[in-house]
Image (tube, rainbow, N blue to C red; front, side, top):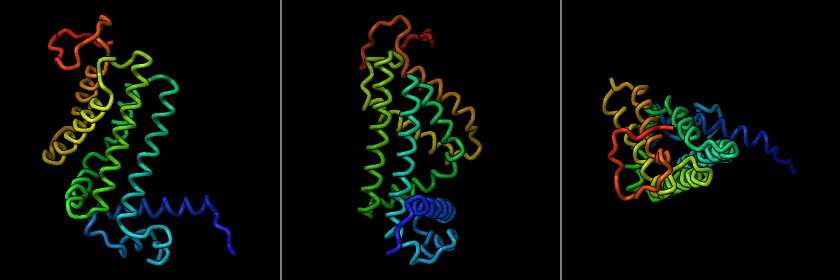
Length: 216
């Protein structure tokens, strides 16, 4: 019996995911047929089904790969105790995909309303993303880089909502300056997460209205 080469198998799997990603960006989830994905990847449908049982399985694998890579980046950065720079670097890494990937994400959200498999993928992806961010925030709190008054899971959810909002703005406003938006967003995230300048504990339920709050 022929033995499977795990390196070649994983390499081909990633090639298919990349080809599928290009098709989804061009045609959307509904418009990108298995035949189109196979053509893009240069393989037969039978070959594709050897790796993925359906388009939903491809979407799930794409989400899993993205989150796994993000987890590794956060793990590497956490070893150097740089929580906020890690978040900002991840934000910068996503810059080129803000306009490109947003229509597909919105389509998947709509599809999740009628496709239980996609709904499950979206919920699981969101949960894992929140858990990754919350864990990074906890590590930042342990090293005194993140405000200890912030509840990590809630803060992580808020950060995800802000990032999603920027994507929507970029889609609705074609002339929106994404670079300027990212700079302001970086400032906002830094101010949100940094401990108070004087080291005092803040009430997490009360907004800090001081205009002269310092950044360190």
